[in-house]
Length: 172
Picture 1 (cartoon, rainbow, N blue to C red):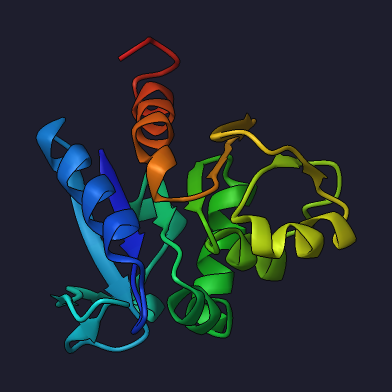
Picture 2: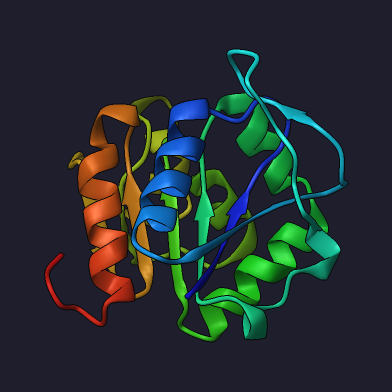
């Protein structure tokens, strides 16, 4: 399967690289996308080179999207109109969308999250609640095609759930 992993300067390295390595290990094609080509630097200085721009993203070409956190990175992603368009397309097509830590900000900015069971980094839970999401403080929450997690420590559960979803609900 083909998975888009979204990146912007200030991305949270663990929440980006752990999913990329796990997806690759399981035989999926992980594609890094950002608003522009060229090096993106993570929160702790680790670089990544996207291979696609966000204007090249289309729900018809991807089975899943991963939105890592990092306050600055997630904020930049949610301000990118092409990212918001892509996430709306993915959601409308019922394709899997995983968002961790501050990544749910992108969901909040792109789709109506009212009534969707979600979790996120504790510092932004009020944003989700104010937008009508059903917030739960758990390591991973799945609500139809949307999978959310709180923080890097939740990455094993987050990726188990994403991989399970990509395998059609069969346990990993």
